[in-house]
Length: 147
Image (cartoon, rainbow, N blue to C red):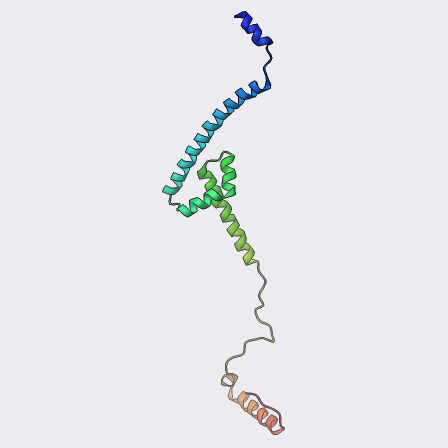
């Protein structure tokens, strides 16, 4: 037995043998992690579906790059979905704020003031007499009178 131990100590291990053992261990660990991740995702989708998420919403969730990166970073699906919803809410608020800060609208200028529909109806008797006299004088002088 001592001879065998001495042989193992003196026999050089190749890099391929060392990496092969590590690769097998890491492949088994990766397979276990993949199975755990898949089970976690299935559970998360089930919980979201029970909460009232539609198939279209779940599809959009699965295609969102932010959710994919969050899940890859170790976040569970429920928290990644909540983070996505917060992100969408913040984007909607930013768009709404951008719309509010649009071009200012001029209200009215002195030249564009709204005139009453019929100014003659709004005149007093004295104002109407003065207007009528001015209109007759202008017409007698050959000017064009607009009413």
